[in-house]
Image 1 (tube, helix red, strand yellow):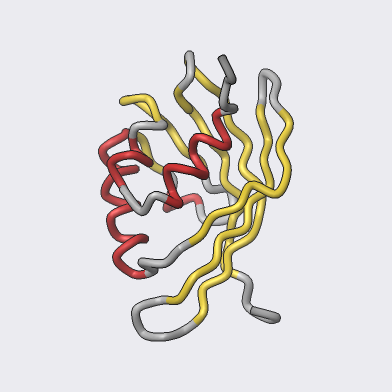
Image 2: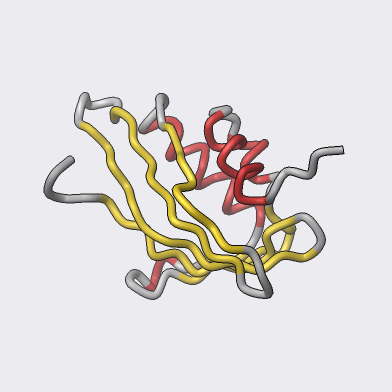
Amino acid sequence: MTETNPMTRLQDAINSHDPQRVAACFTEDYRTELPMHPARSFQGNSRVLDNWKGILARTPDLKADVLRFRAGDLTWSEWEMRGTNIDGTAALIRGCVICTFRGELIDWTRFYLDPVIDGA
């Protein structure tokens, strides 16, 4: 049996464009921290679902790629996401995510993802 790493599972969920599938990658009491935007930090799987509904509505062709990752007590991954916003502008987001797991589900993250301003 081939075991899929959790970052690939999340990438596949995002690329399916199904916000419920994305939310299913996280625990019910999931917590996130955004050090560069602390007011955006939140808790709860239902918020993940709401956020991804909005993201995929704004950028319906979003494609996520995990560029590299390292698993451990703290798993880190480097991401790139790109697509076209509904207003026709290009969307390009890059950065790193640090996370922990409870079983197979993500239970905590610290996001260092942001839109690329120049060079999109």
